[in-house]
Length: 298
Image (cartoon, rainbow, N blue to C red):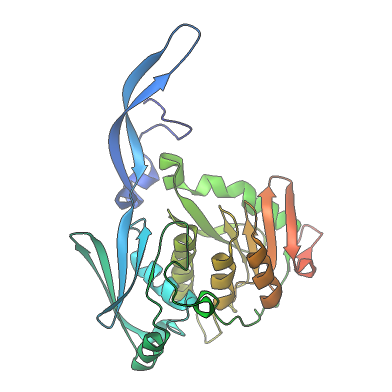
């Protein structure tokens, strides 16, 4: 099959089975110019599916996010945790997903205590793929309380490099569409354990948080009982670090740059923040004492 842009050619792949809901196919015209003349031809292109996803708590619509319609139950759980709406998965009694005329509605039933707290916050925001606090009603609502993360392990520079090298090979929908971000959880040796994709970098992280939270056992705060680190395929903006701090992720590695506010939150929470992670090179922006110069993590 013909290639479109820099994406992989359209053919059977794991994404066709596992991620069909995240991709639509469209016939497009590809133009190419050359010294021998210009030419165009029709090919089938894979395009990332973008859908409005409404999160509804106890019958009250709270937020609409533009997202890739995959792993939506995990997304709802991760968003609820990382935004401080619930304190644990046990605070969510039920979750149902319904496709409606204008998008998808995810209805959650949460504890009365959490719902009262949510109503008090009155944080009706309208999310977009590039913004995590659109519609916050005050400056205070844009910044959630940050508690210090707890980690009894270290990560090596070699492990970060290993995970960075592997990330591109674990993004099937990005390979098909060229439009999705990824959030990956890696063990301390740099092996990718779980990867979630979405149009929005913060949506991908929420999906990852939801899936990881389901798998954890015990009563630790957040992901305190899970040794490892986060790798994201985007810049490290404030909401990535804020969400990470809310669920006790102590190491955040970004393929692109961090922002000033992200660095501030990382310093406040005690998160080791790494940016511009490339093969054989990355930059440490905060808490470098959590990194080991040797090849072995601990």
